[in-house]
Image (cartoon, rainbow, N blue to C red; front, side):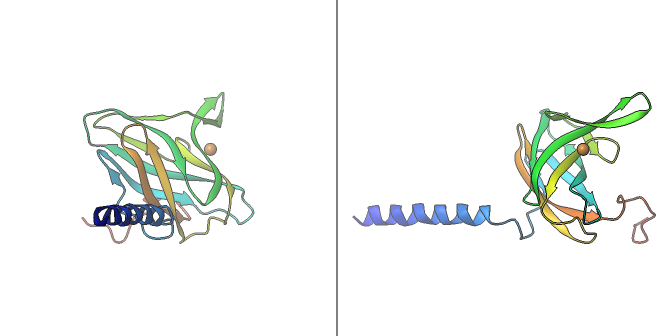
Length: 166
Ligand SMILES: [Cu+2]
């Protein structure tokens, strides 16, 4: 009887902590690292309030020995997200949805304007400079990594950083 009570208590504690995790979106996520993948310089360009879409950029580094792939992204901030890249069509660059983006072992993959990006459709709030929101990236092997996205007026590093260390 005592054992049964203890077991039930334990199970509900597990259940509670799992529920707490799911409602974690507005707190600062842990550093973005799962297994061998690290995510850095995560940013999104500030957009006018009328803009229905946005894009998120970042660096992915695979410090492990196993090739991985980014297969999906999720955020509460948008109704839908897609992985996009840009392709040349004659003189024109067009966005195109991709199923996944390879992150080879020992390599760094850049998501940047004019290249790979996470596309946000149906923004629930405008992307205002200075704000942050949580984005979860889903990898084939590393699983899910949740990170903060900084909303900026321009790409990080576009201007000399007065705080840079030399
Ligand atoms: Cu796009």
